[in-house]
Image (cartoon, rainbow, N blue to C red; front, top):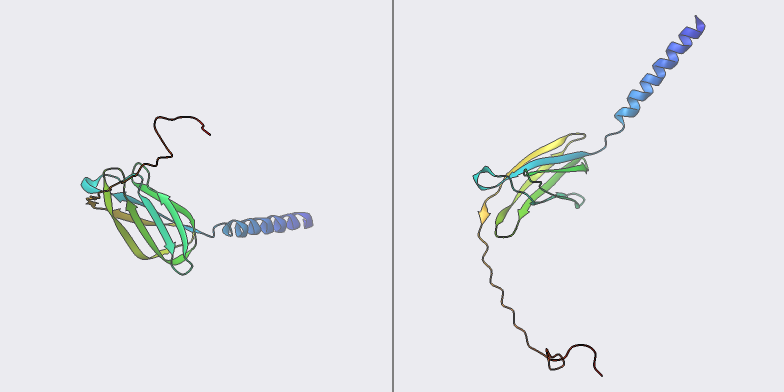
Length: 143
C-alpha cells in the first residue's frame, strides 16, 4: 500500500511538471492576413513590413499567390505599424499602413488590406559619351 501511494504521488508530480513545462513553450505571437486588389483579386508578391515601434524591430515577408501572408515569431505587445506596398511590372498599388496594432501571445493578429492601383509614369533618359580608349574596331588585349 505504501508503494502504491508513493507511485501515485510520483505520477501526479510528473504530470504536474509536464503541464507546466508545456505552458512555457510559447513566447511570441504573429500577424497574418491577406491583400486584396481591384476586382477582389489577390495580390501576389506584395511587400509586408511590420515595425515594433518601441524598439524599431522590423519583420518582413511577401504575400503568396492567394494574397495571404504570415509573419510568425514576433515580439508580443505593441504598438506595431504594418505597411503593405507593391510595385510590380506594369502595375503598382498605393501603399497602405495600419497603425497601433497589438500582437498577442500565441495567436495570430488578423489583418486585411484592400489596395488600389495607381498609375506610375516615369521617364528615364540615358545619356552616354564614348571614350577614344574604347573602340568597337578593336577587341582583345593591346600594348
